[in-house]
Length: 152
Ligand SMILES: CC(C)(COP(=O)(O)OP(=O)(O)OC[C@H]1O[C@@H](n2cnc3c(N)ncnc32)[C@H](O)[C@@H]1OP(=O)(O)O)[C@@H](O)C(=O)NCCC(=O)NCCS
Image 1: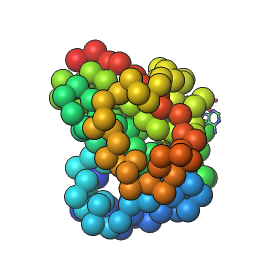
Image 2: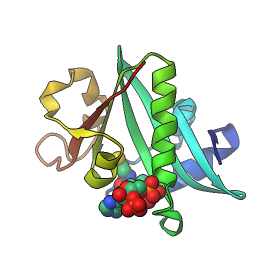
Image 3: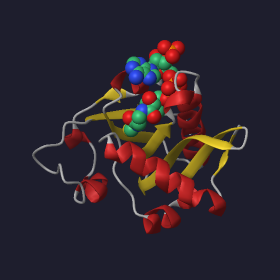
């Protein structure tokens, strides 16, 4: 089952992001960051356990980022990641936001969700807010920029 995150999820969300960040898959986030961005998050529950998380962060007019997507190893390839991204795209559509992007190593996953690879320079400078804090910025970033245009 998918639902918006609530305050009691914060510590688990923080833990899952940082498990994934330690493997270099997503950017690390502080506990403070998670509190501040809690309303961005959806969680997928398997029973009592949070099996996966995903955030949709509004960047600017008509643009939002999919980030902090993570599904626990034991729950992968069961459609949970896709459902989490769908929840974010539906929310973006409801808010009138027509374009989503992500910076990712998971090209196949996002391709099957309809995302297409694009040049970073085609998106506005606003997207760099997180990148400035990333140790790989600017010369060592090896992630792929992908975008999805949706109906609003
Ligand atoms: C990417 C991730 C969220 C996918 O979650 P998931 O729940 O396993 O994804 P789904 O089951 O919805 O996958 C749907 C489809 O995506 C594709 N896919 C998913 N993971 C894939 C992989 N590792 N390699 C290739 N294709 C993949 C497949 O086509 C899959 O369909 P199939 O299982 O019928 O073949 C998960 O692997 C993960 O948490 N990875 C580590 C964190 C990360 O890289 N996050 C992305 C940061 S932007």
